[in-house]
Image (cartoon, rainbow, N blue to C red; front, top):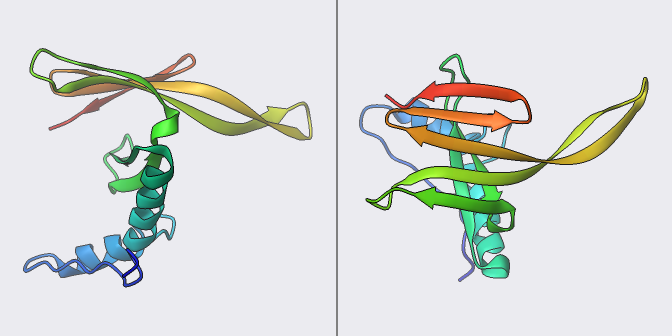
Length: 132
């Protein structure tokens, strides 16, 4: 039997409408939960590790999930209780290049946790999230 040939089904006694919404578009852009899991599984088989990351908009918007290949993890730190307190991720982005052009650049995003607060930096931009 091939993994993920049948769609993933999520059942909820209290929030089925929310569960159905996430199963259809777990990233808020139309990627199904089955598609995300299939991509993550295939990447893990080829590269040895793969991750699903969760995030939300700064203003407290809808949570979303996305695939994060193990190849893009540059490093991480754990505290004395083996909890993740920092992760460094390489990512690619398309940015303006002159008046009409575009170019792809590689950059590093760093997430750091201090207590209940998570901050991330990307170049000179810094954002703060409260995890409660």
